[in-house]
Image 1 (cartoon, rainbow, N blue to C red):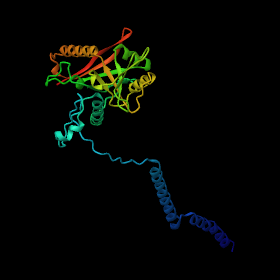
Image 2 (cartoon, rainbow, N blue to C red):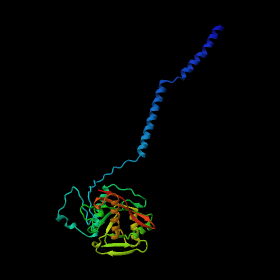
Image 3 (cartoon, one colour):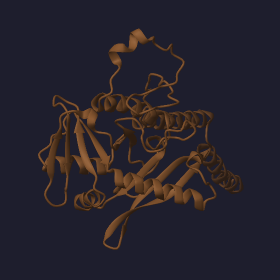
Image 4 (cartoon, rainbow, N blue to C red):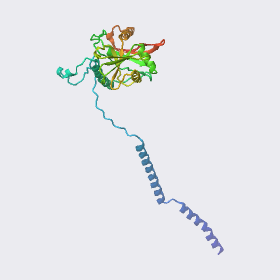
Length: 301
């Protein structure tokens, strides 16, 4: 009796251990449920990331632009000549457009220069206060500089001057040093307003007949800090530039000096004739308390 009771008692702990192990085992229901929850959590995270990227990243705007007609040749000796695939108008169709005065020449030049600026690569400025392309050069009358030979590129097509100035006063001193006048044409006012002596006491004079002006001039083709300086200098002198064009008029003595520097530089590089020069770039530099123009680069044909 006692032996049987001992055996029954000894079997109870073994049965209890097996029941506890069975209760700790993971069922198929729990495993599938956990898998589905993990997949749902992962999909939720992916969708959330994609939504944030869609909200935060900017969309690229598609800008439609009209094609720009390519201009291969521009002449600024009184009018603009453009080589293109369009039909050339007859003489009867262009009678009303012909003009020889400076005002109309500048207008046609501005239009042509804006088109060229769109098709030609721009150059980075060599200094924050400078300009690597001081503008298009033009001449209000016939080219009487000795470059009338058909084999020679005219000065108003091959010359470029790089100006540098740290402030308004320095730029005014540069203009006065070289005897350069600023001319303002266009708008409702006829003729040309000419201003000089900017650093001391600005002097203003008006040329009623713009066709009398024959000097070489520069015209801005793209925005520049120095262009703003010119507008401020003219405003201080009492000349309005609103709706008008500003010209940088070069005196004949300076033009002769630039031509001499150009030829000397070409000869030093082994080119004996001006007709071999395609482009000459001058630069204004400080020298002994004043300023001078130097040839910094030259390209040949």
